[in-house]
Amino acid sequence: MEKKRVLFVTDAFGYGGAEKQLAFVAEGMINHGHSIGICNLKQTGVYGGKRQVDDRIQLFVADIKYRNTFQSNYELIKFTFLIAKKFKPDLIVGFKLAGFYASVVGKLLHIPSVISERADPYRTYKNASWMLQIKLWFINHANGAVFQTKQAAAFFSKGLREKGVVIPNPVLVSSDLPSIDYSRLPKTLVYLGRLDNKQKRLDVMLDAFKLFVATYPNYSLKIYGNGPDEDLVKQWISDKGLNSFVTLMGVSKKPLHDLSREGIFVITSDFEGISNSLLEAMAIGMPVVSTDHTPGGARLLINNGVNGLLVPTGNADAFCHALSLYASDNSLAERCGRNAKSVLERFSPSRIYCMWETYLCNLCK
Image (cartoon, rainbow, N blue to C red; front, top):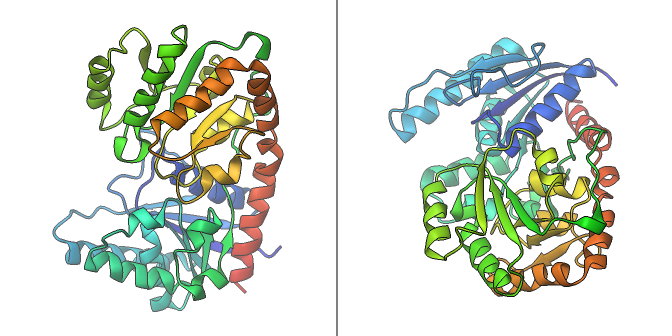
């Protein structure tokens, strides 16, 4: 395959799911001989004091102080324009809302642009401001798009959908996966993710767990992660009388190792792209319970009753019932856990990377 110069544009670069996927694609392409640059429109190009991408990738970091909506967007377009003019890419790829800058600069320099939607566009653009509507117009006029699910793709214009492609997240785990002893599955539930209730609905998780332990008092819940609602979650745990059942574990340094020591993985989000923690839990063979969050990521991963359990969003009673199915039937937990491992093949990194490279390189022609 002919080698290309590709410039990725992002409005954040840290440990989030979208950033992991950007790094996955960028590092895959640099390993296959392509020339790669990342234009980071966030204030810093490192997270936690460490560079997050391969040293062979050129990293361009914006240093622009916020003034007002119009001025800041103008400055970020100008910055991206100058970087693209210097880097001379064959293609510009914008992740999330940075697709706006990729599309604008692509049109100004007559370079094909691709947007990559990594979240739930129905939430992102709900009650959109005039500026967000302008950004969406430019995003809809990009030369191509990578969507995570068909439901996410359906939000965008017909023209963009017809030029786009659905590529799910890869399951990024090592080959040396921890094993799970289903005959002695711990009586624990575990959540791993950001403590952000607007998206993750930890209130629903705690309400469901309170109902669940009324019947199964020998179970406990471990919550890994941090976020803006950590104090609120602590208060809810206390108010619901769950202090002796729920433990806040902090940020996990070894997610797969920590998950593999627990019994059932739970996620109660109202919306997600494709949850990396859910994907990882399934990869190691955990029985999982997930809400059927928009725009279809969980439904893409889970065949209800076969490799996991899927319940409606915002419904603590339904979530409690799903937990009870596992607690009362170990054979169901084992069957779903073993079947969950099929994600290792369905979403293998080599397969997903090949889809990305083929699509991006074809757009360069």
